[in-house]
Structure formats: structure tokens, C-alpha cells
Length: 287
Image (cartoon, one colour):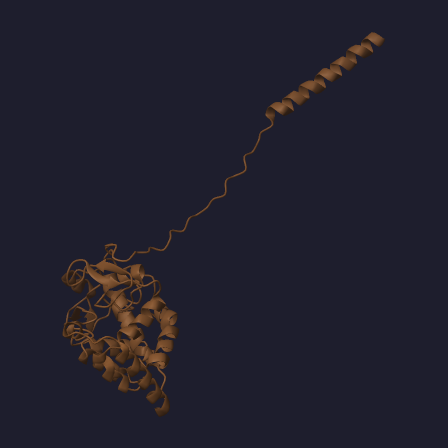
């Protein structure tokens, strides 16, 4: 009897050991998954005079209304400080940066197409324009570009503009052309059209006679502190825009073939919501 009990006990122990071996043999060690890290590319920074050439391509970043909403506050701030109508600043930014979508605006935060000019000591970037590899100003932020736009206009040959009321956008549009800011004779019409199409004059603010006098004195003093401009600097325009006037029968596609821009690029540059055109309409056809 004892012999049978001993045999049964040994059989039970052997079965138990076999079971444990099976469990050990089938056990898997699961490796903890590695953390997935998505590296967002750093913002492109161009050191001074590094010779980097901007890719000549317009890419949609802002809608026109989105652009206005994004930059209206800085335009108003600069108007109150310097007397330039916010509507003029916004319209120039829209026109000269394709509402923030141009290569210069995207890569160099340059929203006004301002070239280096004499006396510029900041960062620079190169872009093909009237000639290959022209020097343009590079800014660390779009707000810096807006502030430098105000400073750029504090020059002796623009000084007469500060006699105007800061809500006189038509006077400023015509005065900028008179002062040589842009080469194209239709430049004032383009600015006024944008201002009235998008109601940008709602951001302009009138000022009292006392405030106007105080503002003029401050700006004139700042202009007087700057080095005298050379004749070459005075006649050199800040921007050079190519403008096409729509004729009967024109379509965006036909115009795009003539000027070497895509339909989407023409629409972005000119803040067009649709494809409708009218004879006499002015379109910017430069990037």
C-alpha cells in the first residue's frame, strides 16, 4: 500500500514540474514600445549675407481675410505711433506679399518687398527680381517687418505724407506713388481697390488737431535725425510691381499663359476669391 502511495505521489510531482516547464517555455517578454518623436523642422534662418536664394513659388498660407485678421492690430499700432493709415499698411502688405503667401513673406518675413538699400545692417536674403539674386531684407518676425515698413517711410522724400490725416488713405495712396515708392503708375488704384474691396478703412482712426501736431513733430524730428539720402536712393523705388490690365475676353487661364504664373498664383497675389474678371481690372503679375 505504501508502495502504491509513493508511486502516486511521485507521479503527481512529475506532472507538476512538467506543467511549470511548459509555462516557462511559453512565456514571452514584451518590449516596451519606443516613444515616437516627431521632430518639427526648425524655422529657416538665414545668416547675414549667406547667399541663400529664395525659392520662387507662391504657397497658400493665409486667406485674404485671415491675413487681415492676423495683422490688423500691428497695422493699427503703427498708425497710432507714426500716422500711416492702417488701411494703407494692410493693403501694401496684402499687395506686396500676396497676403503673406509670397516666397519673401514665408521665408524671410518680408511682407513689403523692401530691398536692402544703403544703410541696412540687418540680415539679408537673395531673390531674383529685376535682376538675378537681388538683396532683400530678412526679418525675425512679420511684426518686425511691419515696424521696419514704418521706419522705411521716415525719409525726407516721404515727409510731406505726414501732413495728411491718418485716415486719408486716398491721399496716402497717391502720395506714395508721387514720392516714388513704386514704379507702376497704377499703384494708387491697386491700393485703393484693395482697401475698398475689403473695407480696410474701418481700421483707420481720425485724430484731433492737437494729436496730429504732436505726431507730426515727433515723426519730423525722427526723419531729421537720419542721414541725408543720396539722389540715387531717392529715385530708387522700394518695390517694382508688374501689372496687367484685363481686356475684353481675358480669362485667368489665358492671362496665366501670358505672364508665366499659374491661375492659383494670380488669384493669391491679387486676393481674388473667384475667376470672374472685368475689362480694365488691374492684376499684379509679379511674385
